[in-house]
Amino acid sequence: MNTYDLIIVGAGPGGSVTAKTAAENGLKTVFFERGRKPGEKNSSGCGLGPRMFRDFPDLMKELTPDKCPSMREGRASRNYFINKDDVVAGYIMARPTESVSYEPAKSWITMNVYRSEFDPWIAKFATEAGAELKTSTLIVDLLKENGKVCGVIDEKGQKYHAPIVIGADGVISMVAQKSGLRLKWNQNQVTLVPQYDFYAPSDKIDDIMGDETLGIWWGSTFPSSYQVFFRESFHQGLGNWMNWWDKNPLYYLNRVINLKYYQRLLKILEAKPRELQAHLLPWLDYPYNTHTDGVILIGDAGGFPCPLEAEGIYPAMVTGKIAAEVAAEAISSGDFTKDSLKKFDERWKNTSIGEEFEVGSELWTIWKALPFSPNETMSWFVPMIMEILGGIFDWSQPHAKRVRQIVSHMRSYMPKATPFVMKYVFPLVAKIFEDDLDKLMDPKKIMKVLPKILNMLPQKKKKRGGQEK
Image (cartoon, rainbow, N blue to C red; front, side, top):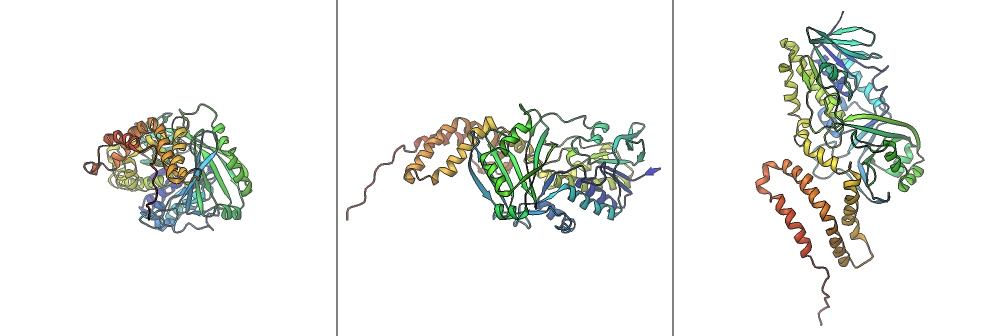
């Protein structure tokens, strides 16, 4: 009989860290991968953030280009702002700022790799720790006795027994569905993300893009689009919640690709399209229903991607480690009930993941209303930002006069900007600084005063002559 202490469905980064931690805690552990090897079914790439290297130092120090040849360290990101005429109205490049508090975050933004390389690399740590990896095995159901979960069943009818099953099986989680924790996500909880994968010579990427790792294309006619560079390739993709699309998603992605600026970039990079990819991604303001009797959900299966930009690998690894530790304690005590496994929620809430979700609703709401609402918000936000950032460098008028023109023009954005700030920005600021609200001015008073200040500014500047000598 296939009997284990712990069964993990899924061998992505979250599942592998879960398996590694469980094996290190003395549990007889098995984790399942439907492909012939971890990462085989995932052709996409990803960005690994500095927190992974801070919180999993012994593991991540082993990640080197010889292990993941696609690996590319990125020290800068570029933000492109595209107006309603599909013209790049301006862009800003950014690097880690002076307030960043630790290495390697002071040195780079992301470490980009392909999942087809990263997933098998990280799974090896689990097998070396003693976990058993079963590949080419699709788990299709949970095994139950007297209504309680006691294992899993694969597509061939093979049964595997364990008192606890951890679902690391992604957005369409069989474990979540069969355990009754969730039948499916609501349309405003899951996003559809299509992307193109391009080949480009590494020397071209280095010469032209320098140390850039990430590009964000803030569109007025399409949802925010991301560009991620690897050693010899890059992705261009975009996404939005399932209840948003009014056209085929490729219509919007192709608007990015067909930008005149983007076509020029493809030409000088000598880039060639290789593949069209698409995936679903849970994007919630707060995780819920993450455990029940004998079951814990981690990573995408539990809805843990970051509420702002939906980065999911780090949350999967953190929640996987915690789930394995909670499982080890439950097995030691012989208590596999929902009440016992609630330690999982208690512990992830005390990590940086929990801190992120403390303002999850505010982050999720403002992001959904800004870069993912191109017609409603970005159509005025982009020209407003460019008016502020770009207008001052315009030589069409004396600089003092140009500043007055900019301020005067900014008044036209107030009818849309003011309610947006009131509805989305101030709730976020208030939540972040809730312990210091007594030190801040009333946001409503600020918004009432701001238009008055703009109106007080003079329309014309009085001429001033030089003093006679």
